[in-house]
Length: 221
Image (cartoon, rainbow, N blue to C red; front, side, top):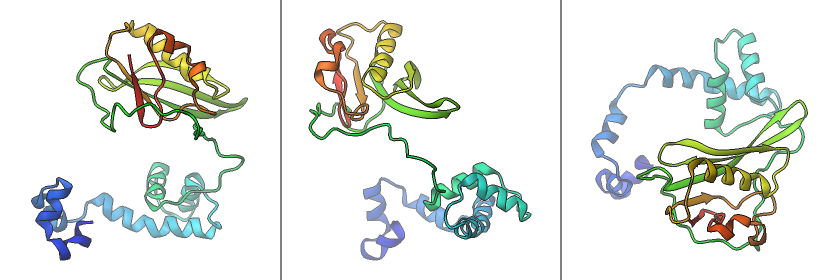
């Protein structure tokens, strides 16, 4: 970005806007490439070639195997990293999993975090999210609540569905384990919620002073 803008604005003004040190920029330009970067530059065309030859269907596992068979010593984690950087991926069988389907008509509480995911004490800011994993018996979804101060998971719940009960149970567990009181000054931040969105009638915890946050939003306890 700096290389692109320096001709029109100069390095110092661009670095000042980006909150970067000009000396860091010039050091980066003159510093010799690291061994990892040199290795990446060797592997990138090989990874791209294998992926293209597969009809753009191979994922990191098959690309790695193809490279190893061709005599290239490369780890799967390296191939995964390079494919992420290149923005390429293999074909995923079956339907993609989506942990959130936003409900456009659902109310959006105000954003109390403003993308500042830091806290000065425990139980000041909680962050909630959903993830999933494929098992022999099907998909399993996990909701968890993370304390922004300690980076510790304070509540979690697993289920075979993504209904409202799943993240609410994780939140209830966190409240019980941390012994949160009504005037604790806690902000609970999440995305738009589970499939179908949260609606106020389903938030039985709201009666006790807790509400679920909306997109980039939060509720204060």
